Image (cartoon, rainbow, N blue to C red; front, side, top):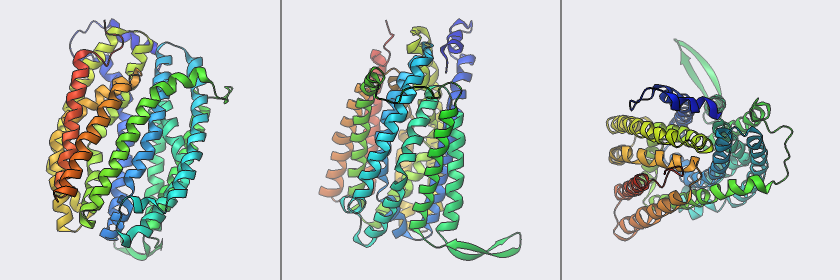
Length: 469
């Protein structure tokens, strides 16, 4: 997004806490990201429901390695944050040539990371379920699912980094449209590949429906094909983009661009790697509690993800607009962003948490017929629903800090919270004291509340705003 339209917001005569022009700008950036995430979550719901119909073992096999997926995906996303900060700042300063040079370097980094993670994940696919303490009866199934899913790692990397690049330039609609396409492909292929041939009825008409009957393997193939289609489409959109196409730019390493991008990305990468590794350890301890706990945890995570959409959609807008304001050296606009984003985010997350609290039993029942799984999932979801507004505040302040390139403090906060509170607490509760899934989620909530406190202190002290005088 160019800096000029945003700078005009500062001339508004409206001094109320609601700046209508800025609110429109925020929502224009945020809603496509929210819709994209909503579609992704809807597909997760459908995937979980489809696989869940095959039984608890199938759900556990798919969910048992999902935290490794977070580990790799979040590491790649962190690299995207480095380019987001650089490009958003360049657009705020009206330096479009510098932005395009950064995009060409993003293409180079995407290829390197995509190939690297493909080799690593495919090579280790047989060992990951063992490291994750997956029940021996489903290890082979989990291993095949993991292997097939990661054959599409290069296009998945392109989707993550190129999507971030487009959003940094203010284009949130293109990633949204491609996300919708990916999700449609995934759902259709799931329907065809998971189930065997069967008779279906539609408007009193009965007909024979073809099906491959591949079960969990079919779900993996469907996702891999959908991810590949998404990566190809977003690469095409970026190449043809009228403002930030890398055409004509050098694809050789340019340290003048890479150095500041990596300076921002490295702390964020270490943060995401460290916290995602914590998720892996967290999931491994939960997997050791048995199939019911693993299934309840997997389903609850899927359900919960839909209710964080307002928070993370707003975070993308916060990072982009903060980067623009920083590039334009506009201190007034930076403060105005905080006065708008924080109340809006808080209201959204209170509403989201309330919906999750009351809808938890019904949502768990969509994915499992086991009373024990539904009961466990409902309990932990209602616990975490209460903490959502606090976590929403942390998400927004972290978004501001990512946009202006201040990623060291969030790295420290997240590592402390993850390892000293969530992992240490869960180890004591589940491995030493013999408590169950509820105690593990209580430790997760304590982690979220600690993040709220640390980011609140940063906000009060002004550590989030490099322009504060």
